[in-house]
Image 1: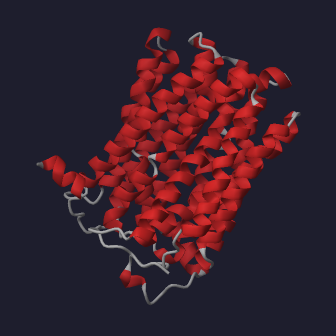
Image 2: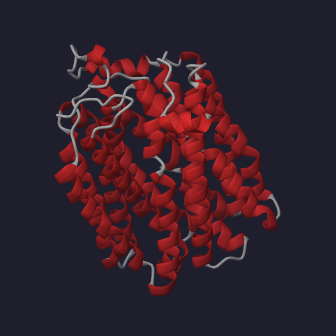
Image 3: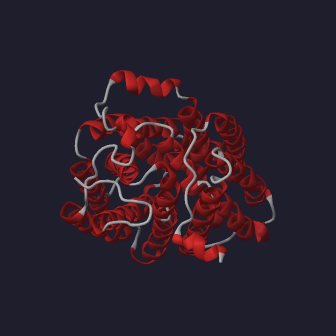
Length: 424
């Protein structure tokens, strides 16, 4: 098994594994966001209301969150590599078979199967990277890893809108599935499996999972506050990402293809810039304040708030500019908040902790937010429905400010090569 690399040098097997995980993460989100990009077309064919379309995303996250605790337990007891490969194959095949779906409930089942596959990858990839890199490096590495989220989401919107508008909504799912199967094969051949806890040498004598260690998570305030703060953020992000293409179609007068293209462009630029800058700012702030991962994430929520309100309730001519700023602010927390969760627990139960985290953030967050927003939209309008996400942004910020009081001490991170160049 591969051991933890130093901060100054990443061995080739670790670098290859990191790149493969980034590629799989990109496709993970691409497959997830094909649905919002084609949502209006699906509604037109199956004649379903907003609440029913929102339920498709609910199906994915119900499967995701109930699978996560089991897969987290498996990840703390068995090798992660075959589990990652199996999950990628499952979600890719479920996406591929969408091409032959011709009724609503088959589509509902398909989306649930995608959630089962994603539950493996979403747990094991951060745990694997945490075993490769020590706590002082995780914010930087996870910020790089999560750069794939906006790219994948943008490609999902773009492929869904463009191919769906030209060839029907099934074609994007067919096209999106093939790369996942190819990268799963690549990970099976070249992915490295780190020794559990290799980056935490003090943990070398205790590597066995125990129920006591797992239950201690419920008495770990740093973990609980970061998890609950993330859940409220995920409620907001899940609701906005599921409904924004439809919102732009209805209130900004865009076609399905235009909405997917515009939102995809905004998401990829904001996601790359916000995730990179947020990780960079947190890494610098950590030198003087061990609470930086929590504090930056909390300020990210508060900065998003006024611009999101402008998108939902302001004049249509301001929508795109406000959306651009809101998404940028929201993406600032991606690397720091995930690093805070990984750093708050030991390697012995890290996969289980991430599994429990995923269960809670989806139970309290995006499992029901698209359907709740759809139900409010059916009774009022989509502006009011999306307005519910403003409340959860405020709650998220408050929880993360509280969590900052319990942030674990971290050895200050040395300047990376990129930061040394920037400082000069």
